[in-house]
Image (spheres, one colour):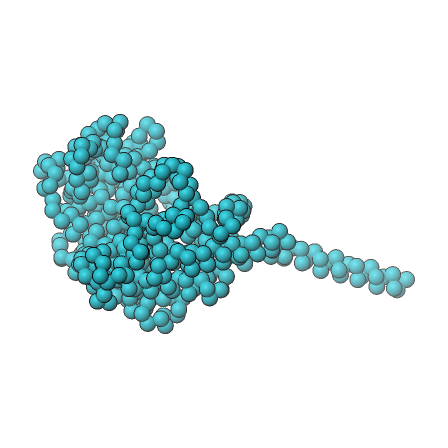
Length: 484
């Protein structure tokens, strides 16, 4: 009888142990298999990218399958890499995410190589232009800080160029515990140059070669002159810019710099940027934002096809940035105040198909486009024959922006993370699409791509953006497994 009881107790203990093990088992058998597949795919694809595609540690946008051609904004030379996303910083940050998810030194070495490629191409003015040329005899070099180039010294914030370079440098610097001298020094110089490029009103220029002018702050207003007269404004790039998501890009890099270095100057710069976004909102009937402003805080011409106008894309970016700065500020309500009117403007400005026009005519709010004859552009309200080199219409984010704003006002935290189930499904597709040479091969459908390469329909190529996106998602999947 005693042995029988002992046997029952043993069975009960075993059952409890099994139950506990099952309840707290962090990874199922299927997940372990999937994890091994993920690790293998990450390493193989990364080895291919780093060992086969990298030039001096850096990358371009696209590669032909036979590797005879490389593209950034146009065809890239044999010693040229691209800074503008989705070039070298995009790939480097993906390698860094893989290092954090796996702890494998290979990925940190790859990210460090990418960062050092950017250090080579850092301009004397502290930032970057869209590409780096390693052949010192090439006409494509710029005035690099290392003295190995010649040409222009124009640090640019256009298309996230300098911002993305700084982001990679500061995150690699942090990962090296600030002990990598070249990277740490370059990051410090770049951040100091970025701060010196901020106007007193909190705005940034598109391009700088030296610290900006000290200009008196003003409020956003409509121009009194005939704004349709092209050529009235010169050197627009020296004045206040919001073009191509500048507010979002700059706020992100400054916030991350503050979190990494705890330097109060970066926090102050973020809040000053927020103050500029408040001040530059135009009055009724268009309480939104423009791409480009003069020092009088009026919308102005940029390129021949970029008129003074209220812009759908920049307005959405500003709304997102104001909410980001609201959180960063600890809940200062002044950063939310411009948003309700701007959301109402977005709602009334949507096109019949739900999109937004890039440009809306000042005061009338009519969607504004351009027609083209050779090199000549003309303003038009007709969207039936638009030049193909530019995005004249954009996706409306009104629903998401309104939802996020409502969550903030209700005191709720809105999650932007992908659900585990959705991420798992994405991972399975990513693994399935990796070919026998450890490449993710893209096929052109004729869609408009970054850099506007003229790929024939059905032609195949390798894209840095696809590789980086997939490596980031595979890394996130591993982090999810670790967290559970």
